[in-house]
Image (cartoon, rainbow, N blue to C red; front, side, top):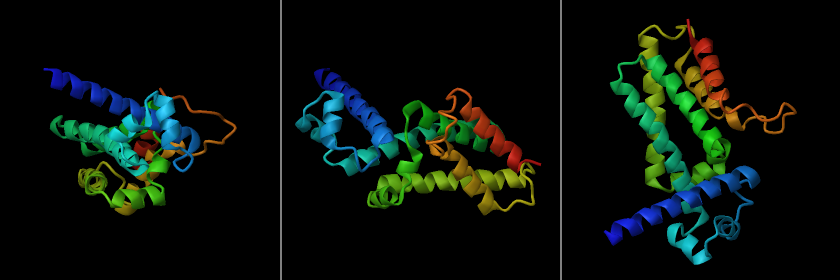
Length: 199
């Protein structure tokens, strides 16, 4: 029993560290965030921090895996519901945008060349990235076959548009319009996508 409690506490602290790292990266960028700053922000010693994540790279890999796990829960639940492929694709996009807004995860940071290069060195996140892409492409195929998508649009363009909109919470951060409404943006992005590729 004590072991289970210890493991739960360890997991709670790990989640707190990941959340704090996401906030610091959103604020400062990956390169500017230091492990010293992160330890101070969370209120733990450096040895405690390093017992969870031995390097900044390990931290980013864990952040990426956490975001992708949340997306997979939507994909996996959607298949059993009998919903159309376009509905499931739209839900995946909406959830991806919502996750970024809720957790202040910077998708642009996660998909920057140096981060992608870093993730390529770790099989699990690489497999997750490939799995997400396979799901997106498969849903596009299904939606085209079901006549839910304008047949004049090519598959590669639809997938690229999906990814561009997926990263939309992090585009235009310096715009004079300010920050988008996190309660409205996921639905707005999903609506733009659906109307743009629909019949």
